[in-house]
Every structure is written in structure tokens, then in C-alpha cells.
Image 1 (cartoon, rainbow, N blue to C red):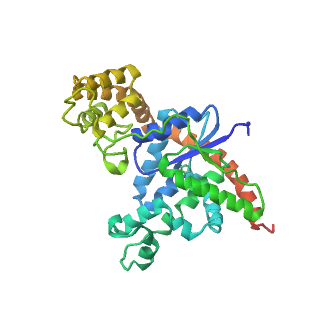
Image 2 (tube, rainbow, N blue to C red):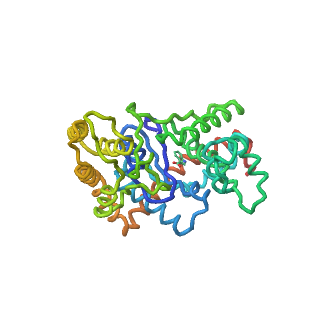
Image 3 (tube, protein in one colour):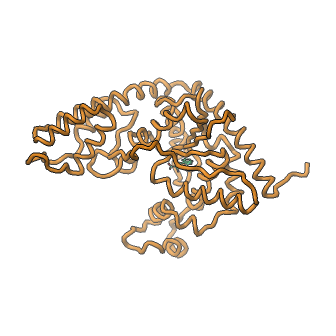
Length: 355
Ligand code: TRP
């Protein structure tokens, strides 16, 4: 288009965005806007793979769009759209599936996890590689829907239909991206064309951010119930931070920091200044630290980031006109690009009209 590389990424419409989404994805999306030709979307079709309540799904799409805008995605600079507003994606999903093996889909880690969950199989009851047998042999009335199996095809189409070069996603999506590259290569070589570029993950060169939860466990995640949401009000947010799990405190100078307390330091490093971080690190080292002070500081620094975003989300809540305008424009641009790729794909595959 304008000589800039194309960046594309999306977030599944399954609930409000939290600090993990913000540092892991959104803040990167915002930074890439000027340097790349960016498309960001809400993956509502992907959300269907877990059979959500229809009204809730619709509300979730809306809230993610509001959160995109509130966090700084600028519709003048980036294309913001909803996946289902681009029906070309659904058509190409059917076409690409003809070149995707059910075996490779079944071996995808995310599929195995979700399929086991849906069938009620605990991982430790079973040996890793029997998922195929378990699904086929399952006599129960539980089922794993085919959409879940073909989730990676749909994601590959999201990326390939826009001919994206860079796809900023977290580590958990790396395998899906690898499949996307494989499908692109396979398609190109099967038909002897150079239709799809192979998309790369985007890496800012810094260390990857893993945003920890507040419960002393690993990652912040919706299903973990340890989240700080961008939409949290001040009182809720302070309460969550003050209740974060710690330990009994350092007893001897320079003792190693426990994983739970290290989580708080990690959050502080993400949200505060190096001086503040150093102050609390030093206080830990000489055993003078009070976790209450650390948490208060952390809450203040998180609020400095999230409260302005929250204000903008609330402003957009009653503003369907803005949301509608942004999404209509975004859908036009995304469809125009997608339909060009789809036309090429159809032609290459021999799906050609007689009229
Ligand atoms: N699977 C991604 C997730 O769960 C969401 C997604 C769907 C996506 N399609 C995409 C991300 C295309 C990047 C590009 O986070």
C-alpha cells in the first residue's frame, strides 16, 4: 500500500481486558501504529468455539472495541474491525481447510487442552498422545465441536487474507502462528504461487513480558480469577492489590525473593519508575520493606495507567454512534483487502465463475 509492512492481530471476544492483555498485547498494538500498516480486530467467530451466550458475546465484542479505542488505538491510523464483518474470512476458511490435516490440528496443544476440558478428561488420567482415541472413543454425550478443531485454520485465514507480515501475539499463540506459516508455504507450493508471505511474530527486542497474577500463581488470566481489569474502579483495584498474596517478609539481608513477592516486583517494574523499583528492592534487601507500602505504591502506579483508560471506556459506553462509525469504516477497509486476496485464492484453486 504505502510501502509499510502489514501488522495484524486480534483478541478473542471472551470478556473484559486485563493488565495482562494491556502489557502483552494492547500497548504493543498502540506502539506499532505509526510505523506499520496496522489492522486490529475482535475475533468473535473464534469466541463461538466455546459456545458463549449470544447476548454476552455481542456485549463482549462491543467492550473490546471500546477498550481498543480507550487504550489508544486510533481509527485514523489503524484499521479496527470485527472478524464477522468480513465474510470473506469465512469463505476462505472453507477453502483453506481443504489443505489442512485433521491430524496436525488434533496435535495442537490448545486443541488438546480445550478438547480434554470439554470431555471432562483430566490430563494426569491419561497419556499425552491419546487425545484422538479419547475423542473418537468417547461414548459420553459430551462432544468436541469441529470449530474448535479448525480454530488454527480460521486464525491462519485472519492473517493470510490480509497478507500480514507481522503478528504481535503472546507465547501461547506461537504454535498457531507456526501452523499459519506452514499452511502458507503449503498453499504456495501446492499451487506454485507466491500468494502468501510467511508471517512472523513481532518481537520488540526486549524481554518478553509475562504479567503475573495477584494470587501468587503464574500468569494473569481471565480463567484464573487473579486479574486487574482496565475497567476496574479505584476502590475495586486498590482492594485487589492490597489483598495480593505475599509472604512473611525477609528475615536476613539479601535473601532471595520468593516467587509471590517477585510477582509484585514484576508488576511494579511494568508500571513504575526505575527509582521506585530500586527503592523497594533496596528495602527488601535490608529487611526494612513493608509490603503494605509496596502495595500502596503499586496500586497508585497501576491506577495512573488504568484510570484514564477507564474514563475513556465509560465515555464510549453510551456512544454507539462512535463505535458504529469506527467499525463500519474498519470493515470497509478490511473487506476491500480481504476480497482481493479471496479472489486470488479462488482463481488459483479453480473456483471460477461462468458469468
Ligand atoms: N487466537 C488468538 C488468541 O486467542 C486470537 C486471534 C484470532 C488472533 N485470530 C488471530 C491473533 C489472528 C492474531 C492474529 O489470543
